Length: 159
Image (cartoon, rainbow, N blue to C red; front, side, top):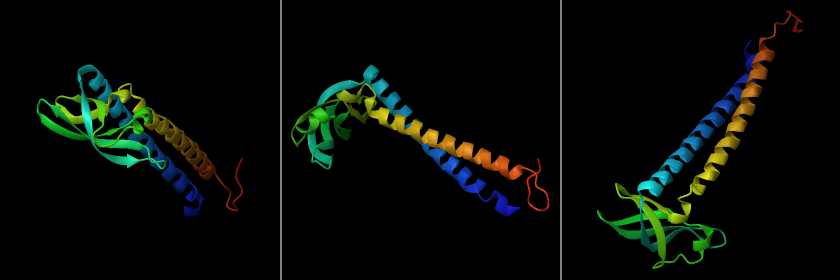
């Protein structure tokens, strides 16, 4: 009986892998949306000084930087992603407008990302991976139904 279920296991495994990935990516996007909503509502805006460029594109544009700014609790150093418009001007000593959470000053976003666009890619990825999971679920269901069909002792499917 085991060989009949041989095609079900990989399909079920694929469904589980993609479903977990989709759920995690959706959770990450929700967390980001919640964070930027909180920063829009309760965050403080300030100018931060670029300390170093921490990530660059293949073309050499800055993608993220380490910044330093003063918060009421003291000096803060954090990493922020940059929109493409600021990428060319990001070098140590440059000023970048940021918003931060006064309760957790290391929760910082560049002000251009306060609209939630930064999480849109993650949300879209979660949807695409969720669709892949749905495809694997459909395949798993089809294989289970195929395997559960009664057969005659000679292997022919009984109608």
